[in-house]
Image (tube, rainbow, N blue to C red; front, side, top):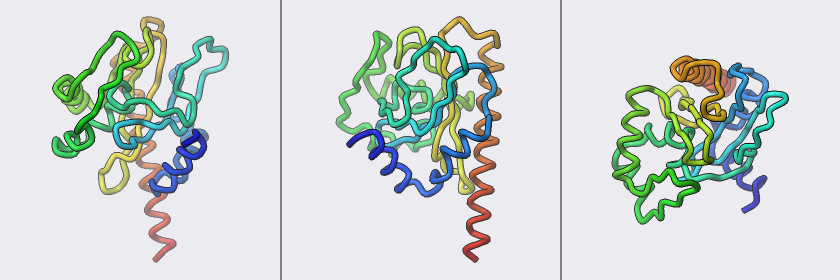
Length: 196
């Protein structure tokens, strides 16, 4: 399946997200000077629906729109996986091959679960070097009215180059995810009102 086909499939099967990329693009939710991205969970992968890079950046990340990556390696993926129950997580990873992209390894559910516990505790995910060596990512889930996580937004940067502390960046990402969640909830409420 090609990139455009993957995006189309994702949007067709994720009704909450039909307005999501355009809302993300026009919102300016994340003002950190770093690359921002929007992704959804599909099985044990994430698919990137949107990406915004700051002007003048020399960094070329692998998360172009339509790119599919193993969820367990990414901050956006871990933020979404952290919302699943233990049974759902076990089902998603039954018989999984645990691919890796760098020397940073997560090779089993036993490796992944403590990482997801940390995400639940903090309210955001941090990933360093497991998708691309030397790149740090921070992400938080986006939810709809029933509380289910339908997407994640995050930022990516070269490790050690950010002027803000990790906690500050994480707060910006969490606030952005909450604001984006509110936007999606408002869209759903409006749709229900018009349908009624």
